[in-house]
Image (cartoon, rainbow, N blue to C red):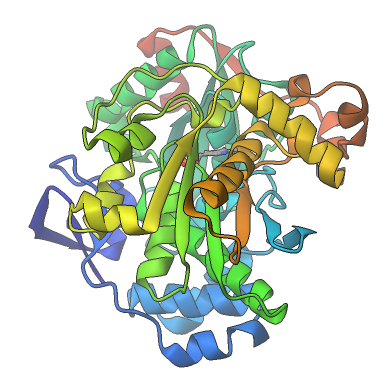
Length: 435
Ligand SMILES: *Cc1c(COP(=O)(O)O)cnc(C)c1O
């Protein structure tokens, strides 16, 4: 498998290099240089396959030998060890639950697969891989739990003291083993600045092999295709094959993976990109002008992105042609008032609690059906996080209906382990050097 930079198709690297660098020197994004559709036979029999089998077939096809099949099989089995069920709400509306992993968000798919691929590529006798992550909440938990127990890796998570939710903090600070948490007396931006400076520090780079394991890593995108194929398999089992997906979108990695699955042959009629008022992409599809803007805080805060980093990948899949993209992708945006209403309506109609991100994807289905007069397709909206991660959003009956998963109950009993540091670089550097 070769990957090229979206800024320069002539710059190609192998999979291992793309995984460790995350981003090419020219600040483009890595994309696979050939995206061949999967064998039609795979789709004919897909309803007979488990998530693990589907994940392996798809990964092996994309990686095209970059990791030998037997090794890849164990990586996939170890990484994708939780279900992604499609749950029926009514005859033509389903929700794809992606929150059954350790951090209760879909980012577990990407983080777990990437961590195992990195662990696999680390060679005997090599310096230990040091992963530095600054988090404002959700990503850090997925990365921390993704790397937990992975050999030859150590993860340092930096988070702003007092600015993450209780569950998020517990997910960051109760792991032990190869995961440690630094509570920074400052903001998320301070955390990010410390990490950035560490990457350019000579002493640290001599001693450690540093990586950021960040969200644009191609090894996070690939495993996110798996659950689209698996959702299709589950619906095919129920006789449904005319499918549209609605995806709550922020950095557009999730929907980017869906579109990659579509390029690989997955028969999907339409993708809906559902955003909050950070509507750079819906605006672009409407006006043809891509105008990134500063992000605005909303209830669906994991989607507060004004300049989605994966958008270039999506344009690239369509050869930068907005018209052909619009045949497959529709986009809608919603404000917080609409989001809160949707949470209530979904509960009234289906006795089902959604997180605010998921509520946005549900609303977009209704609007798409109305605008396109499509009333024959089966619509699937992706549920990206477990509602218990957003306790402040719910009241009354809905709050009482949120079931706290066992793994969260367990966290509540564990002691917090963290080191408190200021926002100055020297202290952080010494902390890392002293190990
Ligand atoms: C990260 C995240 C999103 C946005 O996903 P992108 O891939 O960035 O578009 C949506 N919902 C939740 C809960 C998330 O954590």
